[in-house]
Image (cartoon, rainbow over the protein chains, first blue to last red):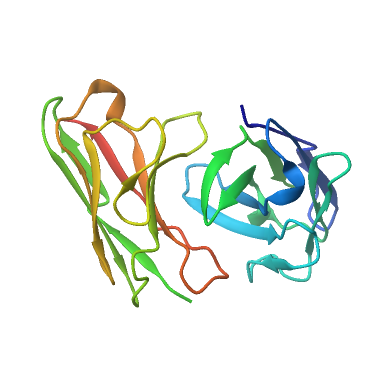
Length: 116
Length: 108
């Protein structure tokens, strides 16, 4: 069965960086596009970034464009997002999600808190 | 960018009631719309895709309808486990992949 496990969250100060990882199993990782979706405390869902299966095409929400970089290592079945210049408003639970058009599998999320 | 609005924001119902949730898109998304359920402390779960198709393992009491700009999620008879937040999401003309703000179904 599909299993997605996020890690790397923590508490950082504004302007700092963080890298999140998502370990995937139970499916052929290299053949699926993958997303990051976040949810601020008590708020709704916000799509963050998408990477195609081969890692060549990447797409970002305007709110993170230029600061976040999505990547993947298909040999390690792992998805990443490098988050730079973090802002207070980036505080959220970050989910990785497997998608075939829609988000049909989600991890349990990793919490990022940006606070001075 | 296509904007999704959901109504009502909160729906207060009793177990056994019928729930009708609405999602409206700012421009046509054809049938490229999904519904998700999220319970406290859990990740969202895909319920309905392409407007009217139930995802694997989703009970028949959940149904979706609509096309273009107006969509409905119906829960025919609410079970205790159905009290949650429901989000719609489109995959037309992406990016971005937009979610609606959610409808909370709570116990009356």
